Image 1 (cartoon, helix red, strand yellow):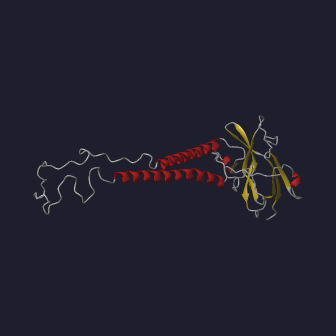
Image 2 (cartoon, rainbow, N blue to C red):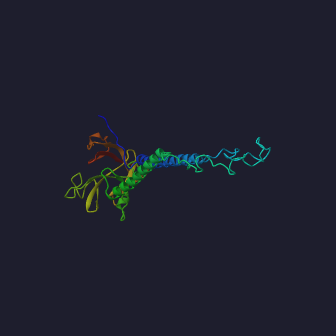
Image 3 (cartoon, rainbow, N blue to C red):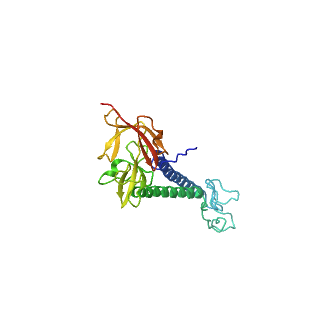
Length: 274
């Protein structure tokens, strides 16, 4: 038989993965957006560099103007005067003296980076909002399988789920009580499950204990908490068997505690340390 372990949505690894994915998209989007804007800015600067059409490069006189003062030209005319028979004004640059506008950079410069950056930023923002909404919904409406600390027994209960691997998360939401208020073992008052009412609904919790660890009664024996195995009267979890609700798998000399939902068996013994 193949056993498939699904990711615990309250585990540290799962939460870290969600955060990395959410912020990763946002960071990637920001980087792409910055690259796109830089690319567009560079294209605009390159397009604005140059000379108006009809103007020469530096060091060359404009067309139609006389050469700089110096030796008289070969025609014998004084420097700075046009040859005889020509009008006494400078020629206009080609094109009638009107200059063409500086060409604009193509609008597509950096558009790919900018578009991708905005897309990733939106995805990251949606992921962050979705995570916050999901966390709020889980706090209001626990999901079967969620683990909790004993804080849910306080007058102002903290219903935020904890990673099931956390040592203090000794309670696991197993089921909703039936119409008679009975938990999965068919009992209400003497049930092996801890039952609590929330928003008018009775919830049943099974212990979430770690094999090899010791626990002591807590809250008028309604629940347990982790304790040192050197403390007298503690209960040691000799074996935890998931998927089975039967005492047949427990060693001799141990006491079996079974739960039909989720199917689970604890083999326990009381410590003898003084």
